[in-house]
Amino acid sequence: MPALLAARCRPPCTSRSPNRPLVLVIEPGPTPASVPLGGPTAERAPLRAGEQREQVGTCEQREQAGNETPSSPVAIVTGASRGIGAAVAARAAAAGFAVVVNYSADTAGAANVVREIRNDGGTAVALQADVSDAAQVTRLFDAAAALGPVTAVVNNAGVTGDLIGPLVDVPAETIKRVLDVNVAGVLFMCQEAQRRMSTLDGGAGGAIVNISSTATKAGSPGTWVHYAASKGAVDVLTVGLATEAAPHGIRVNAVAPGSTNTGLHAAAGMPDRVAKLSPTVPLGRGAEPDEVAAAVMWLLSGEAGYVTGIVLPVSGGR
Image (cartoon, rainbow, N blue to C red):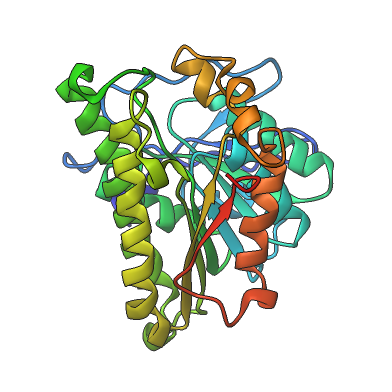
């Protein structure tokens, strides 16, 4: 039994409420080299009242996934506990995907996203993984496969370092973390997605959408040059991989949001940043996460079946 799935198995929970959010925290088996997806020292946010942290084991996978049909197409959305990722997860579920709500640390936020999807009749599970760790990415896909074939991957997880200022003042460890998550994390996710989805290797094919940023246009001087640089790398990755993945039945595109009303700016210390930038936007306001999610879902859909290798701005004309 693979170490990832060697968790202790418990009897089926026949009394589970269909509306109770499902939070899957994957624990390692006894193999010494195995560590939790969050790493050996990762802290987990406390669960809300009525929620329950669960393990994944081979005898439990059907129970853990609820009553999902094994053949349902699966969409993995990284960084989906809030903001754009949460909006994409909700739309993907409404479109008929079984959704993997990936998160790094916000257990409660991920549980809330799952709860809302399930209350609306959709299928979703929450899986914790740090995408900057290639081994955790592999385990994420292993766990997602319990729901069905993965045919859609949205690489939304991204960080700014929670600060705003000129590049010269950004600590080295912050730059490294931003590049680890925003660049290496997307690379690792794309690698594993192609391995699983490739029609040349028995996969079902599908689509990858990377979340970039219009910050790449001017480079975000004085605020997030390091972040803008990481998103520039995502754009180049998207174009190059689109050509490589096409023979494998996989389309690769990116969505580049402009200023969007999420918690990203507040976390960096500028909660009013979107409002301040609004006068520079032809449409006169920032985007809502659901508007960005709509563009993502179009690129995942059959309506965009002849679209690959593009970076689609969703920026109000800015």
